[in-house]
Image 1 (cartoon, rainbow, N blue to C red):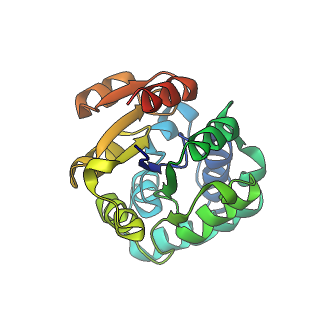
Image 2 (cartoon, rainbow, N blue to C red; image 1 turned 135 degrees about the vertical axis):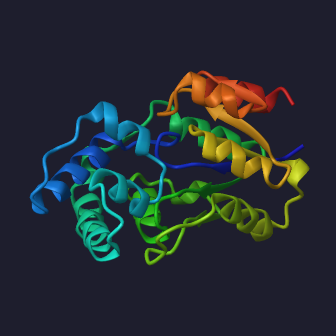
Length: 216
């Protein structure tokens, strides 16, 4: 039976960490701050930008955080996107999933405008009926709301949908609506983080995911 598949973007479809980490550090440099090691930055991928910069700047000053966010966005959209890539096998997998009748949408923490830019940059727009991300002006958001919006877009029942993501937040967002959740183990979430979130399945590779979905 055809399914409604909801894909996270960063860490699931795109290996964007090089672009994200360098864009964050370029932003910090502009603000006169020291660069942050990749090991620390990796834990923040998938979080709202305001949350990331509050932590990295050790500040809850909204003016400073908003300035950092405003500096970061063009850094990634104009430069960081060129430092990112698709994970191996993603275009082929999306083509196969569409060919058997599944409906695909993107559900991401990245702002809608930036997510749309990324999807177009990698020529993925033909695969997805919709992209769901927070408005660029939102300081905080609930990813579960984005999952609900995706279900409403296609009129899907939760039992006919599957969320695929690499962080615990993706799994929790799916659970909030009774949607099955698959952990993308090739992404940025640690095995401990994903296991603690109790996904319905852990896919080691994109090929593994396709096989699991096709097996029913």
